[in-house]
Image 1: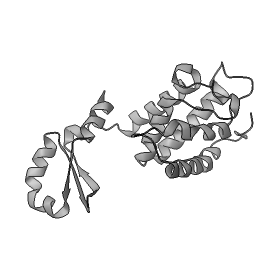
Image 2: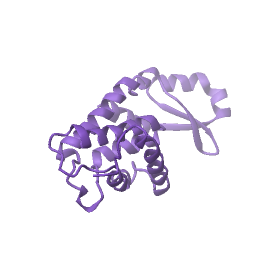
Image 3: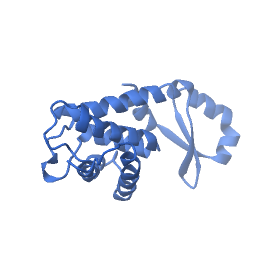
Length: 185
């Protein structure tokens, strides 16, 4: 609910220039304290944001975000409702929309380390901790093939260029965390 409230309020932003901010700062602070999101930038592009303390408290802290990431990875690895392992037969493991939305959100928010944690948790859960995993363990390569399918939703997903960058980054960082070949079944 808190994240939904945060996302909903993100849509109610007002963009002001730096010079407008200098002149109207007291008024803008009152508006931000009242729940309005003030974006500051140049050439119609936001570069910073002014939000009230109530709004700031809705943004998850690191501990809470880590719990969400681990829960989504476990849910995806263990529960077909969340994506599960049922799509990996073709060499493409689509991790599901829930996983894809969270990964896209982390990536777009610049939370690269949390994106790596999400993906590595899913790989560990699916390959080592899931008592119902198939005999041929899901490979990291098949997961990387499915990530663009899961993270490309209109309006919330990442574009093809960002998806390529994300996959390259994940391939480099996640494989470092495992001692065995996670590309092998």
